[in-house]
Amino acid sequence: MSGPQPHVLIVEDEPPQREVLRYNLQAEGFRTSAAANGEDALMLVREDRPDVIVLDWMLPGVSGIEICRQLKARPETRDLPIIMLSARSEEMDRVRGLETGADDYVVKPYAVSELVARVRTQLRRVRPSTVGTVLSFDDIMLDSETHRVTRAGQVLKLGPTEFRLLATLIDRPGRVWSREQLLDRVWGRDIYVDTRTVDVHIGRLRKVLTQYGGADPLRTVRGTGYALG
Image (cartoon, rainbow, N blue to C red; front, side, top):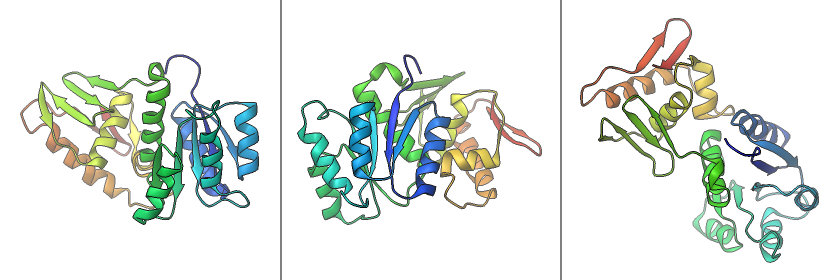
């Protein structure tokens, strides 16, 4: 990322969730600060303005919805992107969350990688220079904004998990990722998935990448994991 590190404020009252988010966002190159309640969040926004806020709906004291409403009502914070986190998936709640001015809405439980992608989307809106959208390796192109993948000009149809796998691998060609690291990045640290699931999805990704010919760009490193190139 060019320019200063983008700053994400995490407002989440559950310590394990908060730490998982911090860890993953920092691993992706973001600077993070965190608050466990609404009052602290409002204070932090004043002291050290973030680029994006990840805001839990259910907070002790002032609710996430109320925080969102207050920030969106002030001219100086009106354009601050807010991603609401909520266990409420009912349509009415989602609409209410967005009506108070939230820019995005993520339902728990979520894959951390999906949340990171949404943070990048909001950042792209407010700081376009910090987020590169197109990644490439040889004749493979991945556009993280349009979720479009091509190889030698042919459009490839990837499922969401295969897309995230490829996005992780293409971000650092040549790097060998263990199955555990891929589970963390693609499925999220707080989701329990068997490591064999990684092999299944790598197999699917291989099939799509080679469907129109072309060498298999995925390398299996015995006893370790996988690499692109």
